[in-house]
Amino acid sequence: MRYRSQSVAYWYFAALFGLQLVFGLLSAAKYLGPDPLLDVLPFDVTKAIHTNLLIVWVLTGFMGATYWMVPDESRAELHSTKLAYIQLGLWTAMGVTAVLGYLFGYGTGNKLLEQPLPHKIVIVICMLMFLYNIGMTIKKAGRFTATEGVLLLGLASAAVLYLPALLHYENYVVSIYYRWWTIHLWVEGVWEMIQGGFLAYLLIRLSGADREVMEKWLYVIVGLVFIAGILGTAHHYYWIGVPHYWLPLGGFFSALEPMALVGMAIYAYNAMRRSGLSHPNKLALHWTMGSALFTMFGAGLLGLAHTFPDVNKWTHGTLITAMHGHAAFYGAYAMIVLAMITYALPGMTRRPVEESSIGYWAFWLQLGGMFGMTLSFATAGIAQVYLERILGMGYLDVQLKIQVHFLMLVATASMFSLGVGLFIFDFFRHAPQFNVDEADPVLVPRASGAAL
Ligand code: HEM
Ligand code: HEM
Ligand SMILES: [Fe+2]
Image (cartoon, rainbow, N blue to C red):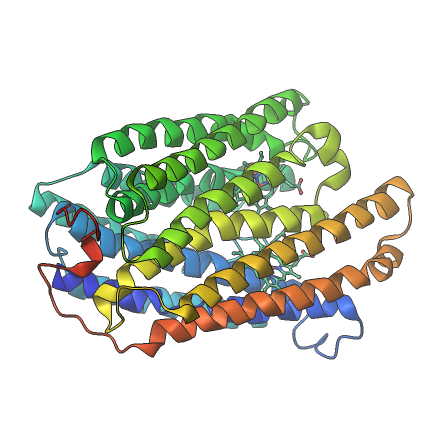
């Protein structure tokens, strides 16, 4: 750690991943038969809590990672550590009360955006505090890198795109139409900038790759995702009651998105190959490369699998969607946050920079588990589409037929959860230590020893 204020990142990282999984497992268990919790915690509640915890922890991770990265890039202390802690307190209070609210059915019912209005307003306030703190840090430092620029553009745009979610629309079609301005343009637009910013930062630091080259390609790749992603929004407009010209538009532009994601994977792979594996924190490199590759698989390939209207008319809103949702979210946003944590942790704790075997177990169990979960959802989804939508069998009859896939889901999800458990254990295993160290070993690749 080069700057004392980077320590705020630690408290942002120590977050909510585990709790999300508890509610994922609860949701999965309900597919398997009698539900003793039906009156207390029905499926809609566990699923809303599961997905909302996901959004909250990923955003918390983004903020923590930014508080770590910006001082490093701009070579300055954070503008205000105190403000960052006040923001974290407010944010946590918002998250906890939102979950308590969902338990009592207090929410908007708008998938992934269930937060009630007062909570949404607190989210906006937290975002503004965060952007102000980061903006002032950069302004005071007077040094602003392109990598930071992409990251901040992503974060600021994510805040702006949350605004349509603050409004209430009486008409259901209108409400669904604008819902995608937030959800789709987040995950297939501006969050990709955030991922791209972290990815470039990690690759530059871990591989010692040339910053100018890395930043040039970052612009190209992020630009491509963004351009395809904007009109790609139309792949959610197929069946919601808007004019039919959205069908070809959605099919065409969303099919371009995976190309950019393939570009991102090639970008990461090339950076790593050119400089070799000289950095001692190889585990962070695993997470970084893993994120680029798993995004290509989960978002690119499995997104493409159901994005054409001719396919989507069969698969829309089935377990095929859940298959893609898990692999894409995990690869792109969970893994990049885990990469930033793994990179930053030796600088904030007594952990040695070199990898530990627990760290590798955490990585491979999660990866294998998530791959198995994706296959479980996929096999369940294919059977569901065939039996329900092609043969015309009733919804609940089909659910009984596909239960076996949910056994596989619970088994692979348990493996995944073990990996997450180990990650959390590994996180807390070494006591935090916030000493400022000019010759920070985190920053120095083993072979070149070059200052970055
Ligand atoms: C223990 C691990 C997990 C289990 C057992 C699990 C299980 C589930 C289940 C059963 C659903 C409801 C699917 C439906 O609507 O029928 C769901 C939804 C969802 N989960 Fe998970 N999950 C787990 C971990 C994760 C992780 C790590 C992520 C992301 C990083 C994630 C992201 C999502 C998303 C985005 C949805 C909504 C998908 C949709 O509505 O199509 N889950 N999960
Ligand atoms: C990191 C990037 C991505 C993430 C995190 C992601 C996540 C998700 C999630 C959570 C959903 C369910 C949303 C809901 O029903 O509320 C969804 C739906 C969808 N995604 Fe993605 N996605 C990503 C990229 C892509 C890409 C690149 C494509 C196309 C090539 C794609 C195609 C689709 C389609 C067609 C649906 C609608 C499914 C349906 O009709 O039920 N996604 N995505
Ligand atoms: Fe989308």
